[in-house]
Image 1 (cartoon, rainbow, N blue to C red):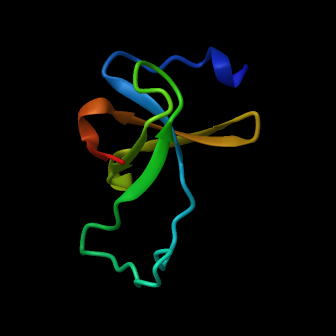
Image 2: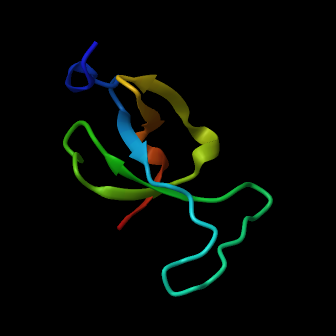
Image 3: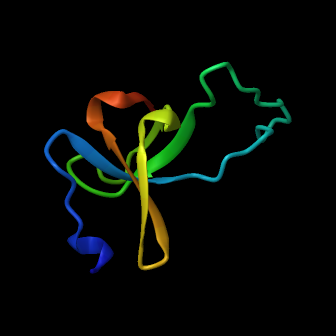
Length: 82
């Protein structure tokens, strides 16, 4: 299976998570709340392809294709676009 062949089901988007940092570029320590930490990622499929988004990682499904870890989330679970 090729990465380019994957098309998520209607209402879902395929993303690749950014590395989770404990500190921002400005040196601010990023904490967690009781529900976890929001994560940034890049959308790699669909009409939002290329957008960077923020979402809650507790509501995602992760799998691996061609050595690349991918995540599927519902499009309505996007918290913000960066």
